[in-house]
Amino acid sequence: MTYLTTHLPFPSSSTSLPPPRSQLIISDTLSSPGHFAVYHLVSSALGKEKRKVIWVDFRGEGRSSWEAILKKIGTPLPPSTSPSFIHISPSSLPSSIKTTNKNAPKLLDNNQKPALKETYDNIIPHLTDGSLVILDGLSELDWIGFSPLEISKFVRAVFAKVKLSNSILVLTIHADHLPLSSTVIPSKEAGESELLDRLLRIGQGCWWRVSHLPSGRSGDVMGEISSHPLTKPIGLEGSQKFPYIPRSNPLQYRLEPNTVRVFPKGTGRGFL
Image (tube, rainbow, N blue to C red; front, side, top):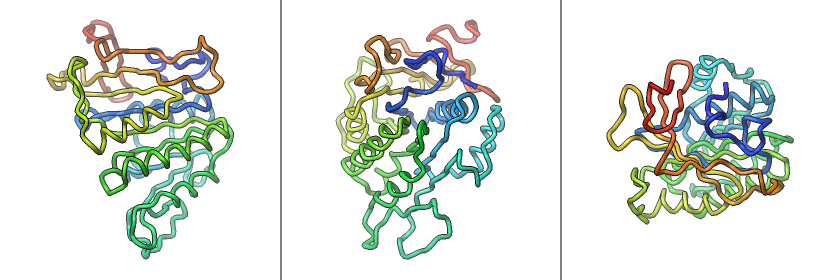
């Protein structure tokens, strides 16, 4: 299933995933979650592309929910013992509490201070050539006490290894602080705003911004997507570009039981 690729194509026409050594930032809002965009990428990676997926689940969603959703859209998850899908579930439990799950690194060090080194050390051994690495829920790190600087340093370190392994990095983050209108100047409050700014400055890829409608959901339209290229990933030719879909004229989408319908703004059901 590659329901977004037609509308948001990647620089290489032969793939439904971002090019190697690039990153894709997916921001969303609490009223319009961007999970469907991540499912699109995972479905493409496991199905058409036959790539290894490393999912770092900072949101604590759990494997069972992904199993149910990906089965519904036609791409069942590999068995939990399969090396083609690695689920890493960082834990904010005190470091003194031991777990038997080797893929559950602690987010607190021995002094009960926030620390991401154990998570980094858990990710890197799983990296193989061409992997899809998903750091899912970076806002949750901000909420439990990590500073935007700490999180961005962690992302940069992971991205450096991702590029060395010819892999792809996907980041998800909430962006409720951003205005829904392209004519409104965004606020400069700390937290999510600073974190998103730092991640965008890393560049070498693209930003998909998923947001809800100012008027709320309707039967035909549930939200909007815009696409904003960052600095060009290493190794791409000058003619290979991510699509630019401005906030002033975004794509719109509607979630359906087994897919997502995407269409130009204002066309609604008539386009489908």
